[in-house]
Image (cartoon, rainbow, N blue to C red; front, side, top):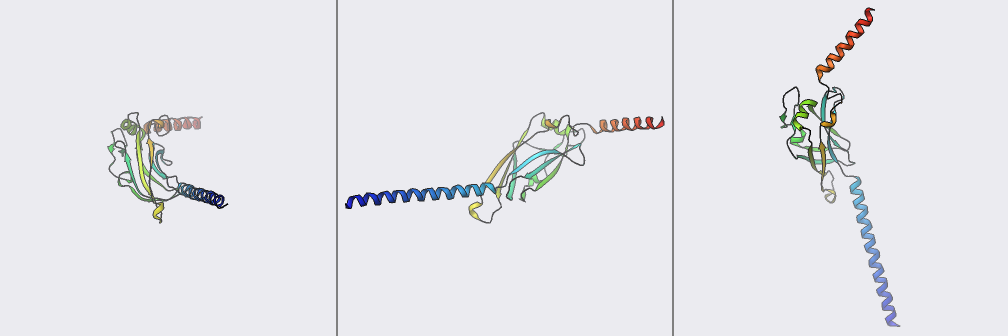
Length: 188
């Protein structure tokens, strides 16, 4: 009779250990889900300027639900800046892509006036640039402070045939033509 109690005790011990492992695993999964739900995510993308449609902005955006800190950017090749007019732009030497961003709240954006379509298109040569962003969660708790990384693909070819790709002189000519037609109609 003594030996059957021992097997029951071993069985109870095994079940207790199994249940403790399930509880630990559940806690770890809950912690991982909580952390990933509150992660920042930094993306960078080109966007037509809302006020001046012939200009393209470079937008740095935290689309995650948590704040990010110590953000640095690592492009796979040099980026252009001040891409205006007919000349080839200079390589980027200033701004948040070069200096980094100390803190970016959830939903926050930084806009960099990047340039016009034609000089940007000449710089890219029909290709694209991969821009990696490395950053940390801005958390008070050391357990939540891990390094994160995201990659963005920058291109300007997708802006062809948009309002930003039309040369300013062509826009002026179209406006003058419309104005001329309006004046002719007013005369009659």
